[in-house]
Length: 141
Image 1 (cartoon, rainbow, N blue to C red):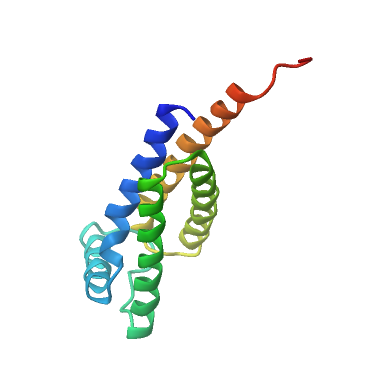
Image 2: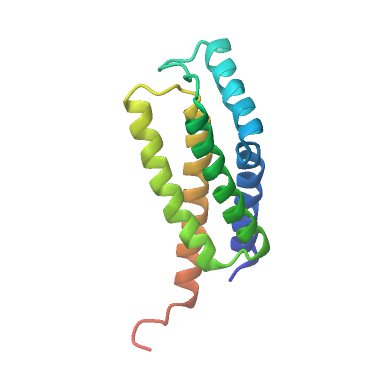
């Protein structure tokens, strides 16, 4: 595995850790949803405003925040090609759901998250494909 791929996997994991850690408790998740609402309104972004969340909504946000933090920590500690590949597929799926949400009228605040998800998918994906070509046997060998 190349040092560049290892750095990319770890780097996107650190980014994910920074972004998802605030969503990992009910108290901080509520605050972050408030920040997203403030950004939507303050920047006059398109799409539906971030709604008020009930305790059940906040529970699920925090639950998924914890899972995302744990996945980020796994990649920080073990930035392997396998973890990078799994993360790349996950970023593709999450990006698709973000595009769907935006097409259905979600707040354009999601656009910031979408840019980083797609960037991680393309960077890691390109490095993984390059690494795969490097270890593939030559034709006729």
